[in-house]
Length: 238
Picture (tube, rainbow, N blue to C red):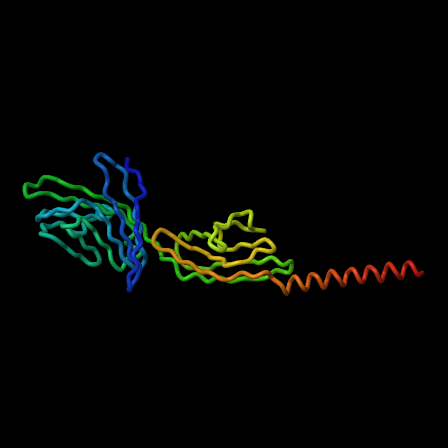
């Protein structure tokens, strides 16, 4: 039985989209299927096998369907798929949702002997968009902070003045969500970090104490005290 295995993914910025690199090579005898992630609309380079220096027959399959099978000296490209024998790297460009599949490669020498096998499971994710950070002062003086972003399988993190926020800093919510409410009195530069397996993005804003709300609360408290004193005085005089 084959099992999925997580592998290291590197994020690389490019002008026409997100590009990632995934090392899917396996130790000898390992039957796990390495898991790679590809950015929707971008590109992924997968290290499927070790490099080879001369021409061999290469067969590439996706979900057991043959994409190509031919002798190559160095590189081959079919549609948005390519393989470079000299590097052992399989590349998918302009990634679509339909590219979400399992890919395998077999390399045979001139005598037809199988000399290398590579495999990976590719999951496609929409990259993280630029987050939109918004602040709202509540009537009680606390601040609700919201971080909105587009993308698949989003993960959230928060920091204040460079220090990671923890749940004890919050009146409600938790630091793994897109909406939190800070406890009264917290201020500084708050940063929202959003990530998935193909990209990441951040947004930050300065958080100040909700002075206007506090003034309203104080004035309301004073008015309530004045009213109580007036009522008490009226009762006393009666």
